[in-house]
Image 1 (cartoon, rainbow, N blue to C red):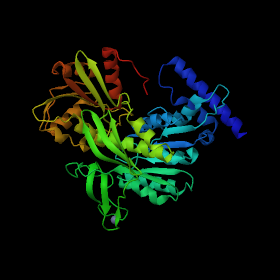
Image 2: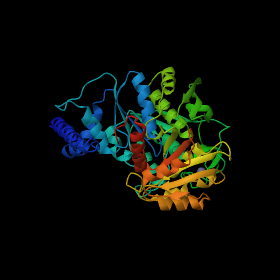
Image 3: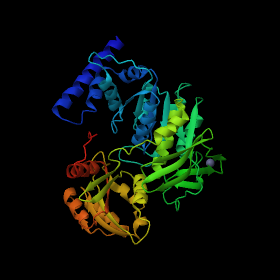
Image 4: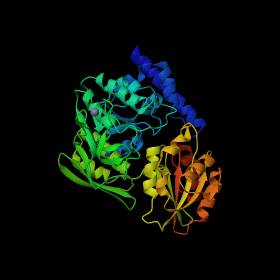
Length: 464
Ligand SMILES: [Zn+2]
């Protein structure tokens, strides 16, 4: 009876998705899951059980989509048949939709060799869906303060994850970022396999502890100490009161070099070393690559193949993308929380104070952007104060953003809520062959991208 009900649920879910896609060209990702989920409550569980090679979940505040993309590439090269959800559709409905889209018209599921479900799962949704997904490997990236209008504090989420892993039993490996103290603690909650990853590079240090606020305390309430801090609260931490310290990771990055728009590092697994270069700048790219490598390792993928796949990575669209319009380069940097903003600031920071930076900063406050925009005050914009910046502020909350920049000592040349007009005025001051950096929240990124696509005639992508 249950199996029949699941099959009916899938057929209706798939049908609903097709209808919506016929009527509108985009935005059909959640409906099949909603329809299917209404008909069968255990749908996600039975669908996950159908994956011959199990389910992999990727969760954390930052880097889910990039990590999933990296891992997908590795697994496809390793001969896996992956079934993934669309970026952003990472709630239960989105997961069911991913399955519903893959079934045939009779609700049957094609049985392929090495079929693996690879899902990015919203960090607040994971505890609720974990039992149903019953993952073979679950990967935990990080926990940052993000969109507090939706979730509770980081600590509550960490505690829910601990309970979830304690309840899961022997089956399934966990892959954890030991540089994040909250994530590292998860290893104490399981008797199953644990694969650790992290950065080991003494030459890499951020300037001060200004940003450490997400995981400052140990379980007993003492302030954690950092021998080396890489990014936000990620680093080589220790607590003297309970003699707990960050363990040496199994999968690690050494000799990191972030320059010329790329991220280079030595990937070390089982003391085998591979040189990796990915054409996307930023330390978070290194973390995402490490997470993908460690997860592939947990799935017993060959280490040489992991390395060669990472070296073949292409930047995902929209997150950081470059357009060429009228001999001027326009680089979009998706920025949606303080940690991401601090990384964006590092990327746009020029090598010397004499170089002018042309900047268009767009702040929207839609649901997908986070309706509470106070997070812009948690980013360290002040670090840009000493540079020569030509700034235009735009978006629905252009005035709020302009005030934030002003308080950081950088006065916008223009404040204008119309994005297209702001783009033109920002481009006015960019020399031929020069570059305009665009900082944009999620919906702002979609808007500016669609303008740039039509101007540069670059192929569009499916809006997520
Ligand atoms: Zn302690």
